[in-house]
Every structure is written in structure tokens, then in C-alpha cells.
Length: 355
Image (cartoon, rainbow, N blue to C red; front, top):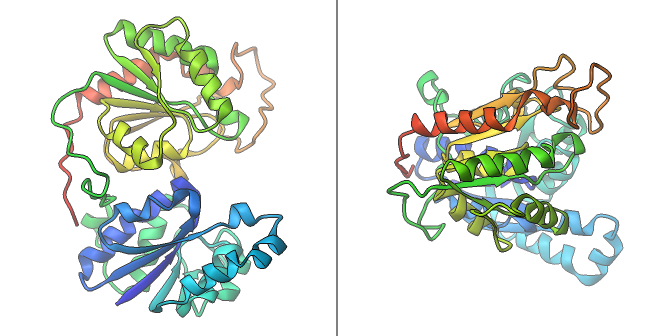
């Protein structure tokens, strides 16, 4: 049975879909998956051994340039690539209008979330069949439930309480970690202003970590993040700014680190998929619905009454918090490092089990 997955972005959403693929493949080894994904994330689905073909799409690059995409033949090429195969089932795991359109363009029976549970209810216009799942569950569990119902297998209580992202280390061109590395990775880059931990906190955390004997590595994905990484590393021996990495390169860095500190960012979900001990910092956003999920993950959330506000701009009006955004006044660097050290001390090195 051949199934097409439509989950085009973002990095965290794509990673959240991997445990459902693991569940399905364990339930029926005859299943074979293809996956439509944004070109920037094309590496990720192929890390799972049940995924055979990854079909890139350039919706982000085409945005505002539709006529150019049509004239250049890029869209026509994507459509031909999509229609090469007739699928027994097309699962839109995203629940957006754009993913619904892609699902309908493919050849096969299309299924997705019902209008009461999809992020964009109009997406259901493109499906042949819909399923309702809990709106209160974490995104990982929502996709797992959708797959189990669409592919008709049982997701029993014991299986549902565990999570296996199914990553094949051979596809990542690396061997399992066998001993402590003494390396911490700080994932400081994110999107909303209210998701950013203060620069002063990052600098203090780097100093505390190196004094404790760790070396710190700082990745970056754009010029602004590179500048921030250089500022964090300035005047602190033992802190290094990485060369710009591919997603596979970042996976290798994270997998061989002892621990990670992350803000609400896609790379934090990659750390969760690799089961690297990670302390994730949440202020304006709610980790209960879409935070890092899995083994060796710990969330530090704001204790301010207004959090999580789910706003891109801080509107805190209480007593002076001393930092901006105010959410992070309750997450000082010393507490973050102590939390990570305790998490690492109680985490046994993971054994990678292939599905």
C-alpha cells in the first residue's frame, strides 16, 4: 500500500509527523510512504526508513510570484512529479488550504482533519473523507490519531504513551553516541520577538556553562542569528560559533551533544526527535499543544499571570521585570543550567531502535 503524506512545513510540524509514520509502519510493514514537503526541509522526511520518495514543493518561494512559477514551468514540473504515482491514500496531515490543494492535485483518495479540528476548516473542501481528533492533544498525538484512523490500525494505550520518531542514524551518516562529549548546544534563533530569550541571558548562560567545564556551540541560520551568536561568544573562551549547517549537519551536531538549551524553535523539535536532553524555554507560547515532545525533554515556562499570551508583541504592564520580554524574568540563566544538568544526569544514553 502506497501512501502520500502532505505536510509541507514548518520544521517542527514536519518532525511532529514522524512518530505517526513509525506507528503506521510497525502496524503494517507493507506500507510505503512518499512525502510532499517544502524544499527547505527536503532532508527531513528521508531520515525515516519508511519514506521512499520525497517530493519538494516551493510554496514559500512562489508566494507573490505565482505567474513567474507558472511561466517558468516550475509548477508544472512539481505537478508532474506529484502525479507520477497513484496512491492508495493521500493524507493531509497539515489541515491548511494550501496542503488541501496539494492533496487534491495528487492521484488518490484524500483524507484529512474535520472542519472542527483542522487549523483552516476550508481545507476540508479538498478531502474525500475527514476524521475528528482531539483539539486539546499535543500536535504529535493528533497526527498519530489521524494516521491510525485513516490507515485502520489500533493505537493502544501503551503505544500511545510512548513516542518513537524512527530516525535512521545511517541515513544521517552518523554512528550512535557512546560517551559524553562535554558539548552543549544553544538554539537561540527563533521567529516572534516574544519567543526570544534575552541576549544578556544567553551571554550569562554561556559563561556559567564554560565555568562548569562545558564547551558551547552556537548554530545560526541567517545574518541576524549569526550576529547574535557572535555576540554570545564574544569574550567567553570555550564558546564557538558553528559554520552554517545543513539540517543533516545540525542533526549530527545535536545528536552528539550532551545537552541543548532551546527557545521555541524548529531545531528544538529536532533535538527531541534525537532524544538529546533539552531544556526548552517558553514565554508567550504554550508547549502543551506544540512544545518539544518525547524523551529527555523539559519545559521551563513563564510564571507571569499573562503567559502564555500567544502574542508576537509583549504587552506586560505589571511591576518591572528587568528583562524584555518580561516572560523570561522567571527563567534566569543559573536556573536553566541547573535544570539542564539535572536532566542530563538522569538521562541514560538512548538506544536507537529502528521501527
